[in-house]
Image (cartoon, rainbow, N blue to C red; front, top):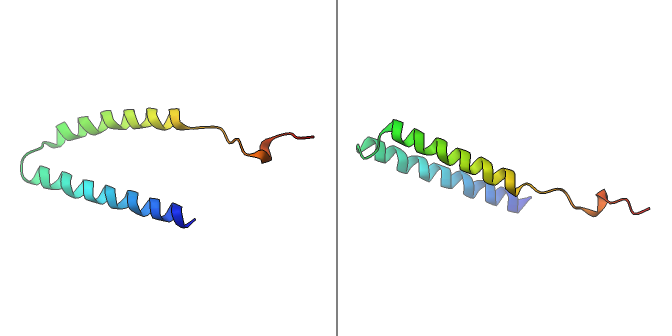
Length: 67
């Protein structure tokens, strides 16, 4: 479980850093909200596709009928 918590904390940290960077770009005028929203929606679709293709069946031995 410790590794899962570590990975989760790392993901959360990366999200916070990305949000800070994004807000700084918007604040500085280097980025429009509409353009960023469109870009993120495209990324969301790509990520959903990756998640779907990465899903694998549970091949644990407990699922096998050994009798």
